[in-house]
Length: 100
Picture 1 (tube, rainbow, N blue to C red):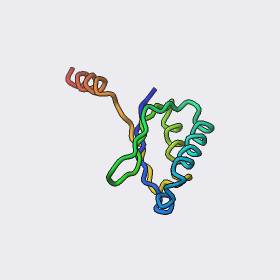
Picture 2: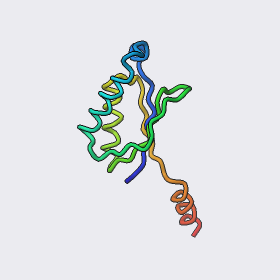
Picture 3: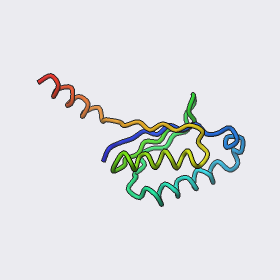
Picture 4: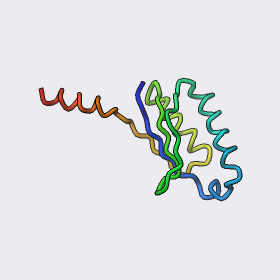
């Protein structure tokens, strides 16, 4: 399955209520499971910088990956970006294909 990276920045009002952070995260995860049963999460990180969280996940299609992003935006994310990730070995194969 294709791999995607989702970065999110939470809305200020969501970040102010840190006591509910775990509960809100659990609710988000349940909504993703309900609407995107084929998504497999590889990693979830809290990060420093412009964004607050980074998720690495596999999805069966771009549409399913878009749903994850939309669920994030509907549940407290001020900003969400989803990027397609290509494994490095596959990237090297693509480079070799172009050189042939």
